[in-house]
Image 1 (cartoon, one colour):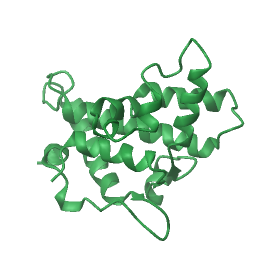
Image 2: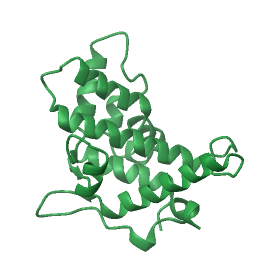
Image 3: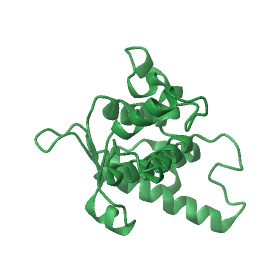
Amino acid sequence: MPDVPHLLKNLRNHLTQGQEITLPEDLAKKLKLPGRTLSVEPIKRVVEVDAKTDLKLAPHLKEACVQPGHFEKMKVGLAFSLFSNDTAAALRMLVQAKDDKINNEDVLTTAWFVETVFKWFKLISSRTTKLAINRFDEQQYKETVTFSKDMIDLFEKIEIGTDTKKCWKKIGPHMPWAARQPSL
């Protein structure tokens, strides 16, 4: 049974191996996302743009995040840098700048996914009462539980790979305890 950091690295490794992630159609419609498919290509474009300037769009995003070597694949920090709010904001900046080397639909969908995975990882791996799931604020608790249930649904329904070869094994009831914790 995988733990949360391994799920994060697994998602990153699928992307960096050139596999596309396809979101469920009902989710894309519900959130009014411009597309359903995301890939690592827009994130690689952020790395390219950052390499040419002193002022970085995503300062923690490095080449090793998008093209990890054998040992880099094992580092949670590099996966965390890829799935960060800085990366999502940088992707949105590329869309606003009308970068002609990207497909805006894929970029905005990728930005949403990066932000969502970042929020999930911070929530589930938090060691502080401010970020962790707690009942200090009942409204925030309900929102957190709803978000966690939505993430479980997302992880159960996403598809990774091509039409002919799917790589992601549906998690279903085997979802790690840490990811299912709020629904208990």
